[in-house]
Length: 58
Image: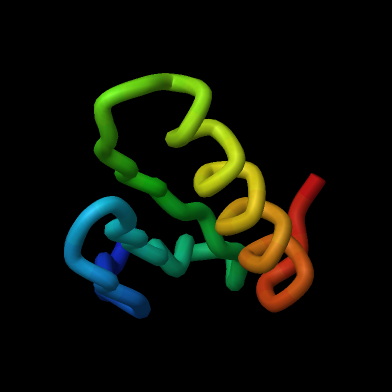
């Protein structure tokens, strides 16, 4: 069973859902929107880096 909790919602362009797993781990979905991939990718990278720092992960 996975519980879902929105931990940060910044409107456009970023929405992050943090999921706590049954084994005391964390996974997340990062949703970003924009007109160009070149503007979206740095946002996703930064969000992923910060989430890894806060919640661990590979």
